[in-house]
Picture 1 (cartoon, helix red, strand yellow):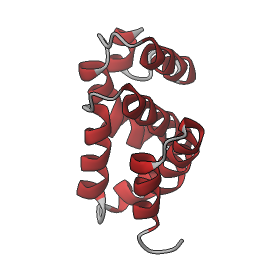
Picture 2 (cartoon, one colour):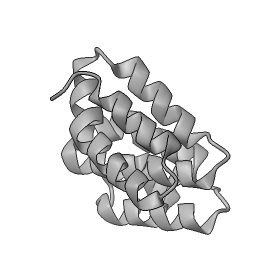
Picture 3 (cartoon, one colour):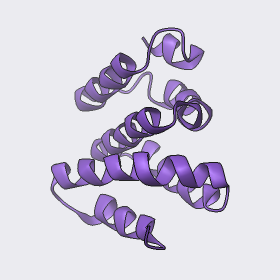
Picture 4 (cartoon, rainbow, N blue to C red):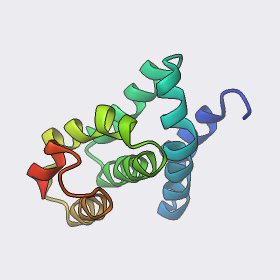
Length: 124
């Protein structure tokens, strides 16, 4: 994979106006970038700070993209999801009032099997 490919995806997620392009980039980021690079620890701080910014954003689209990254990461490597996403989602997004974010959260809960993560079980 090309070096600094994640920067290209970060740029799409931050600057692209069309949500379908952001979601495509989020799927690739979650499955091909986040899961392998967090394991390797080399880019862990860069990736976690980017995803934390998305999760804590006031823009509901950014929070939707964060949940799409979480879904893709779960499909790719569920242990990385459990360590780096599940607890944060339960703490920060459980009481989100935006319907679009709630729908993405429901999709995530549908993807993750019952009992896999205590944090997500609280959200259900």
